Length: 84
Image (cartoon, rainbow, N blue to C red; front, side, top):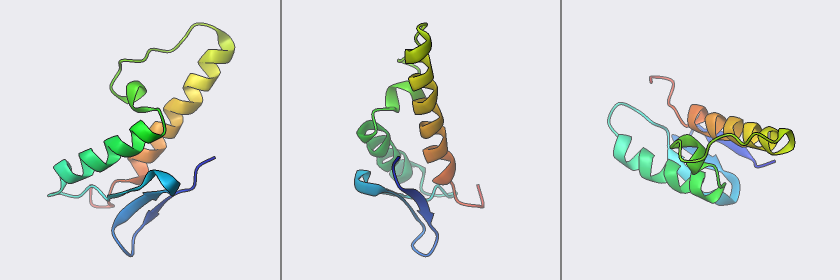
């Protein structure tokens, strides 16, 4: 599992070797979006987020998809500042 933790002292979300992104606030959407996209690409979950990858029908493959979808949701959620 990847180490994922918001770093409040720096106002950045860090995702292990995949980089970091500023916590999304009221005035940094463009910077946040670019950095989060790169993290999601690095973890091979961006296609789930943008909807271009659909859930497979085979049970084992579907379970793996669900795990990746939850990972993507966790990354996005944890990269939001408390004010958002």
